[in-house]
Image (cartoon, rainbow, N blue to C red; front, top):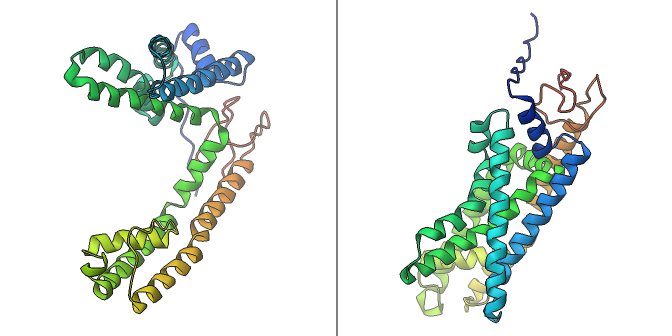
Length: 281
């Protein structure tokens, strides 16, 4: 039985200037593309720092004005970057609906939306919109190869992580219910949700101390919950480590027979450098 053929790549019908723009913005390994990435990374970090600094109440009005002008400068730059990505992308709608496309749009919308809320009664809304600008930090992920590797590992481990989460959720519900029955409202455990909150804080080894058992049996169960919390801390670390190992091995095993480039995604059919068909993993 013949093996199923890989899908054929779509013909790139973009004009030459759009292809060159896409190569620079989305990065194809050229010095100009690397320089563009470095500039964008610097702008992202600077804009996030500016948003944080704007929230400091002790800054004088001249600094506030400077930060406001800087924010609009960053907004214009990121707007041009977003338009450039739409123009340079092979499939603009696909980029616009992608995660990074949504993040890029979210980073520029708050500044423009704040123009439509000039009234003093909307100052809190404007403040909330400005806080959304810190989402620019998510733009950094596209420039880190290890970020996509971590994403692949988490995706591959989602079933194991889900089972672990459900198991922990079941344990804290059981511990919370038992402590509610043992301690009762007179000792601060006024309801089962409040007791579950205590169990989550205890099992995760946070230990706020705002609620604590008073009876001997309650303290014994609390001790078990604390020890159990330490025992399960290493579980998600092991799950993600296994996923990272598998994802890294899958990438290293996908070598392009034409140019020799490695570290291709597990579901890639063509080399991201030369476009050659990749061998099946």
